[in-house]
Amino acid sequence: MTDTTAPGAAARTASLAARLRNVEPATLLWVALAAVLLVLVAYPLGKLLVVSFETRGTGAFTVDNYLTAYGRARYVEALVHSLELGALAAAIATVLAVPMAWAVSRTDMPGKWVVWIAVLGAFILPPFLAAIGWILLAGPNAGFINQVWRWATGASAPLVNVYTFPGLAAVIALHSFPLVFIFVKSALDLVSSEMEDAANILGAGTWSATRRITLPLVLPAIVGGTIVVFLETIALFGTPAIIGIPARINVVTTQLWQFFEYPVRVEVASAYAMPLLGITVVMIIAQRLLLARKGFVSQTGKGGERRPIRLGPWRWVVFAWCALVGLLAVALPMLVLVQASFAKGWGRGFSFDNLTLSNYEYLLFRHEMAIQSIWNTLLFSSLAATFAAALALLVAYIAGRRLVPFSGALGFLAMAPFVIPGIVMAIGFYAAYAAPPLALYGTSIIIVLAFTARFLPIAYANSTAAIRSVHPEMEEAARILGSGRLRTIARITAPLIRKSLLGGWLLVFIVSARELSSAVFLVGPKTLTMAVLIYDLSEAGNFEVVAALGGLMLVITLALVAVGTRLVGRDFMLRRE
Image (cartoon, rainbow, N blue to C red; front, side, top):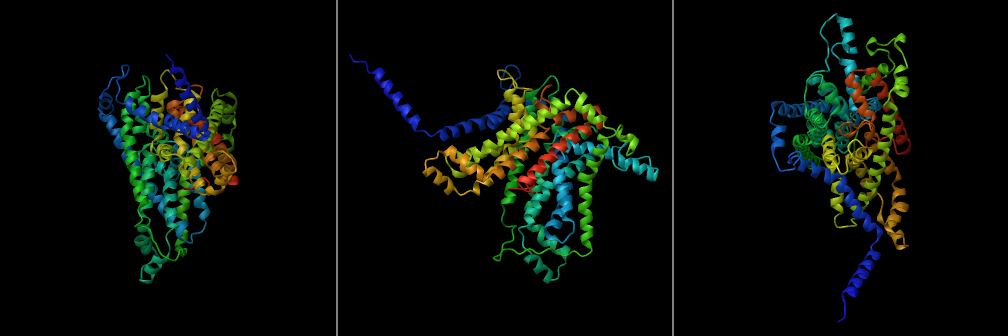
């Protein structure tokens, strides 16, 4: 009897080996990319959902976590407070930003550079530092504004109090208004002056034409920007923690933080985070639908000429409004932070005998974790930016060139973190990777992975726009001459879009360096970042040292912005693809 088993197996093995030899290495890379995206995005979110229905210890199915998460009036009240805070902050930001966008885009207002400095400054200044600045400005007892008010009027009651619900919303709005500004200005730049001219011919004045013609045309952009501010507010941790906790204003993010106090109740936190994720997804869909509407766009066959509106003496009134917003959002908080960082006691005001370098000396030479937190921040942010930029380039290339059938799914996974609040993403990473066998909680690995996933959409949006600008003919020519797909990307595509890649890298680095919402849930004693250390120091009330550490963070950020401006362009932080 002839044994055919071994020859048959050998033939199948040889056939499989031949097929594998014919597989281009790039194809294996696409599979690896899918696996990476699953690890970074899909698995943490899936684990978050699973854990929210698990009994702690046994893993048995239960809905008790949801009953616990929403079984107390205080927890439900926190959710309501978040929604109210988001609505109020978004409304204030819209009132601040829409006149500024209109003035810059449509009028002859002088000093438009002031607006751009204010917008860029609000992007650069981390929200938790702005919150600390406003505590120094508008604290009810020792805030500078209230000190001046009492000195000038003799009143005992404070003029402003940051530790109130409207005060908290205003501080958030002063940080978030650039989001509305960018949306609305981009829309206004596309609207021609012809319909306004027609309204003027028919007797409408400048203000009437603006109110009845211009603003309705860009209403979807206004609402879209308002929704983005609303979503950023309800997902924000730093400002509500620094101002809201002392003011006894409990919101979703601070309540989630309390679930992570010992003993950690990650299953309850997962259940409590689900409505936040659901609200975010629904609002993002609504925003995209609004911005996709074409009925609000002025369309003509003449290319859309745009002429600035002459405001006459009113241009100075409009300029004063823009300057006031810039003063409140950027200049005053930065000024008091700088003063506090060089002060022996920030409440003693501006005087030569109050100046000192001891706060910086303490941080740089005597504080046990300050230098380590700076190195951690630089290391984690640079690694996250590098991984995000490389991953985004490859995924954008696949999706843009439609190389595989599931390229659209890869693009979807790369953009999915855009609709996931940072605090929800952090809880997902904790649920997925903190427990054995990986036990990554408190390690640099989990922080870098979380930062990469959190800000991957920024790098992906930049890479997608850049890939679209490169015609595939050059890549096809390289392929015809024998170059492999990966070599073509490295030698042809990447060099052509290097400025966009650098811009995306810098953006991811900057936002990673200031990230607090996800870092505060994942850092350990040896992996503290500057943002988390600033938050820890602010809880102790040592605002002079906090301001000094914040000053070091701003120096690093400004240096990177200067590099980006020099190499990529002046507007690299303000582009909206």
